[in-house]
Image (tube, rainbow, N blue to C red; front, side, top):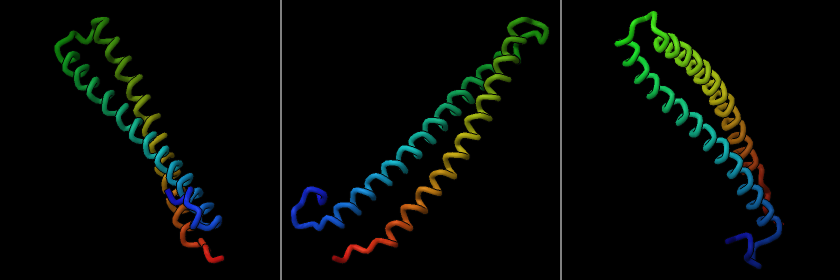
Length: 110
């Protein structure tokens, strides 16, 4: 709204546009983190089902071995997702800090 107003200076418009851009980048990182968390939740729910099925199976059966492999693959995927989440948390922290520094350093006087 402020970006299209004629009474707002060019400096203020540029600053607001930059804030919007930075907030959008921050929101994107947060959304990606939420997607990864959701993927982990889905895998963990499936692992609960697999554990319950494994309790009823003979440990030498092919299905049990297939479940073990699937469980192992899922654990690898969870580790990968958690690593990505850690990276996103670091990126989010950096983006928030950069936004705060930008806002504190603004000089909008003409």
